[in-house]
Structure formats: C-alpha cells, structure tokens
Amino acid sequence: MESSYISSDVLFEILSRVSLQTLGRGRLLSKECNKLTYGSKFMQLHCQRTGTVSGFFIQSFVRNKHISTFVSSDNPHASRLINLDFLPHPVKIEACAKQGILLCTSQYPQQTEYYICKPTTKQWQVLPNPNPHYFTERIGIMVVASNPLRYKIVRFSKSNYYPKFHDSSPYNLHCEIFDSENWTWKQSKDVNLPFYELLDFKPAISVSGALHWKTNSRKIFSFDVEKQSWELISLPKPLCQTECCELVEYEGKMGLICLKKDHYMELWVREGHSHRRKVWSKRHGMDMEGFEREEPLCWVEAFYNADIAVIRGFCKVIFYNFRNGDSDAVRLEKMFGNYHLFLYQSDWEPVNLMGKEHSRTLSQNRY
Image (cartoon, rainbow, N blue to C red; front, side):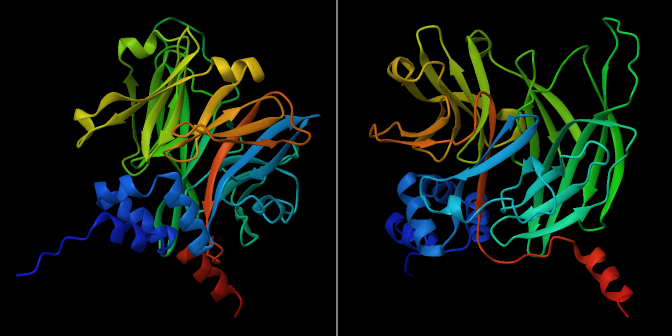
C-alpha cells in the first residue's frame, strides 16, 4: 500500500494557491500547515499567487478626529487602493476580523452609527444600534463561519452612573452580542471583574474562539464568544516583573511582548493541546538598543508574520525581519503620537454582510 505522506515542499506549493478561508481551516487542522504558512516567504508568495492583501490599518486621533491609512510589506501599492473613503461618513475603526471585515462607527457624537464593511470590495452595511443608554468601553468582532459569512460582535459597556466604590465591589460591565445570522443585539450576562480591573484600550486579540484584552494588573481577560463566558488569565511571575508587556497575536496564538530593563525584547507564546494545559514559552528575543538610538521610544507593536516584527516609530512603522536583519520603513503622513494597528487580511471577493435571515427579510419586503 502506497504511503499518503505529502512532503513539506509539495504542501507548501499547494497551500500557497488556496483561498484565505481554506488556508484558515488548514491551519486549525494541521500543526505542519500552521508552521509552514506563517513565514514571510510563504505569505509573500501566497499574496502574489492568490491576489490577497495582507497588512495593517493604522489609526490615529488628530485634531479631534480619527484618521486611518493602510500599509503593507507584501502589497506596497495596496495603500492607494484600500481606504475607507467609500463609507458615507468619516469613521473610527473599532475592530477588525480575519476575513477582511471591519467594524466602524461614525464620528458624529449626536448619533453614533455602526458600520460593517469590506474595504477591498467597498461593501458596507449599517448595523442596528446596541443599547443607547450604555457607553461603550470595549468592542470586538469575530468571524464564526466563512461560507456563508457569519460574524459576532461583542460589546462591553457601562451604564451612565457609577456605584459607590468599595474594595469588594465588582467592576461591572454590561455585555451585548450581535449575531449577523439573526441581525439583532442580545443582552448577555454582565461581566463582574475585580475592583478596578481595567481592560486595555488596544484592539482585542482574536485567538482560539475568544477575544482577549490585557488588563492593568497584567492579567489577560478572555471572552469565549460561543460560550459567552469569560476568565482572567494570570501571567507567570517572570512575565509580570518586566518593565512593559503587550498582548499580540503570533502564528494564530496568543503572544506577549515583554521589554526588560536592558532594552531586550522577548516574545512569549501561550501554547498547548488543551485549554487547561497551555503554558507560556519563550520564542524569540531581540535587542532594541540599536533601534532606540535611531528611533527614540520605538516599540514592537505587532507581528506581521512569524519572521517580521512591526515596530512603532515617530510618524512611521518599520517592518523588521529579525531573522535576517532586513527592514522596511513606511512613513505615516499626518499621523503623530499614539496610534493603533489593526491586522488586515482579505481577498477581493464580494460577500453577504447582512446574514441569511436579514437578507431573506429584505428580499421579501421588495415584493
């Protein structure tokens, strides 16, 4: 009987020609597929062969409004083609899903509108508003099915009043979940965090069916979108004692960038076969002193792929390949100070943003 073994070279060639959806399923089902497809060589070839786009939306707050631009290392000309000018109003990017879908809000304080859009195809749709009596604290989005497209939005919010603060009082967040399949927001159980446990302002990391935020006490708040349950993940002591740490996604897993006093950066990744057996392991290290001499206050903000770190600078981002030392700086016009990065990967195929039930209702109302 002949062996069904497929060599890594053959698998590499096959996967470099499949769609983003097929690639995503392969990464979930196979460790070898996951390892092969996050390298810079593979991602560059996949973008070339399939026409997909990979990069970052970068958003800054300038003169009382949010502005955004798209940058890419593998698709340098995509910034001219991909923007949010097709939307009816100026918007703030709230969250990004892995299938090229953005969640945005209008920048008019009188009445906030929520938009779901796909920038590569310039499709957009107005979403129903969540509870208007609550103030949004954090929000995230996750694609739960790709064909047909189905996504869920999780909104954490507060009432317009605050209870008296006591050491034993929980830090209460309301939770609402929007499901594109039924096109409605539904109230979920409130999240009662320990007193003054605050979620980071940075966009959520979407990994393993959950949305993750770092907290001010150096824990990780994880919300399972399907189970509608949450937990606080404590970090090992060595990671808590670093000068600074930031939550990132790395090879489809939860990662943590830690900066030590000697300007040395470490990447730790949470790995394991089951939820309870996941452990943090050190994957990479990088000396930041040379970068800081040329670019004061620079910081590793994210990872573009397994080989390339995205370094925040003043008015620019640097794509740095820490395996071979190559770097590519992209200047950010009209962007100063603080900004957020949203990892964006997309094809150019139109999708149904409205969900099956809502589309059927609209179709019936036409006749």
